[in-house]
Length: 553
Image 1 (cartoon, rainbow, N blue to C red):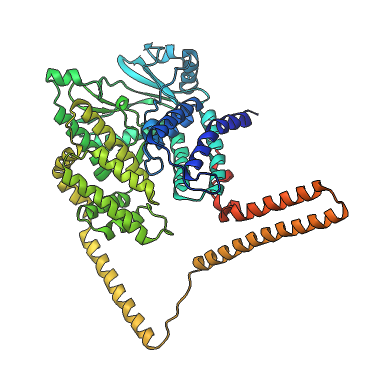
Image 2 (tube, helix red, strand yellow):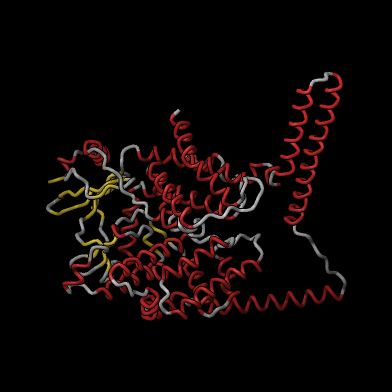
């Protein structure tokens, strides 16, 4: 009963927005031109949507924060409105939190800690953090909220059922991208609710950045890590958005801080392959020694070396304005659906190059402006942004926002260029780890191509060439013909119903009979004429992957 009540509540809150979006695309749901609305009306609707999401609870708040970085799915002003959602909720009663600690660690807080502050220092949708004292030193105790796992599981089940319907009704790259994001989120939020994974991520950070002089992260207390409780060292520091007094006093240099932050995230993405995926001002501190402190390691993206190399190759192709190189890299990164025309993608790649060229020419172009334009390209064209770049762009936008907070003339592109210049040697090492093998692969490819061309010419001389139609193309043709036949069958059925109505009217002359019959026939004919063709197919084919396996625990 609870499931149905929750499902109904979510549907009633979100349905008006879905209908509104449909009317934006088409004046009527089935036919008509798109409806044009002014920016101000979209902004007000975005604010209402944000308020609705906030009322839906922790799962949708966390999910909305993920979408807040996906301009390939959401346009402005919805992107900015959702990005402003704060993951702050009232804390749970201390008794419930202490019960979780006792259940996980086997003893009460009085036995475990010398002191324990019952008022949390931070409270988010999934957990809250308390300050305590252990063995003579301050520690942070992170506790998962009671019952939050059941709430998240229920909301994810409902979300997948909604997506099941959307995949039946609407077939475009936005719905596909939406589905992929929710599916990825369902995995990540489960990882985020297991604090043992967060402790592992902190250890991973120490492996890659333990010797770095300008960045630190908390270390978990050995023996006090459980699924719902994580005890770690307490790290003092100032939030990165409250540093104005320190800059004014001269104890901290703004330029040094911004270069350090930029280097950290570039090094994560391009060199180390581990990305802190939840950057916001509350998770980035600066300690008394001027070191950057990164908190909250629940969300971490680990890049495979191959993915990292592909990202670097696409960036290098963009730098030398190699459109084919960009397109090949996009295919390798999974940014392009194989069914999309390469010519269409070439236009998108050319548009991205134009954005980069304008940024170079203007000089004052900011990272956020460039990222926004590139992301708008992803929204306009059928492209899907890799999740690694989603989180990196999110970090880039945050860093520039921090810079502009203290210096309105701050230019993130210039800072990034200086940092990349210093890291050039490391980047070359990463991209050319095996130059001999790369040369060998190129030689093998060239030799195979020459052999293939020679074989093609020989078979052409012998008149042995055959043209084969790909089975997928045959399937598409067969599917098209089958669907048109179904549409014709529905139309014939409507005509037959009209004839039957006329015959029945001759036997039972009543205007109600003829009126009811012809209305039914007209509705059926209208349905056959107006319904989108793909809805005549088997809906399970388009919702594949979103069945029961999508929401089972």
